Length: 84
Ligand code: FES
Image: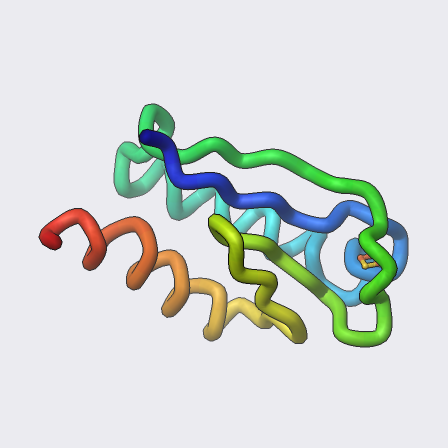
């Protein structure tokens, strides 16, 4: 089953970093050849703007996401979890 990543594309999250986070996710997926394993979608504002930028991975919402944290989470969720 595909892992679902939902990135908030609301104006607050987008301007606080999800514009760059989206590029980072897309690059990561391409570099690791994960297009068949990841369902990447955008969402509208989910009312958590003050905690943004927000990204939901599976059922977990991760707030204040910056590039360093994002790469760590992607590595954990998409690469390391494959070996389990
Ligand atoms: S813009 Fe992302 S929660 Fe509001």
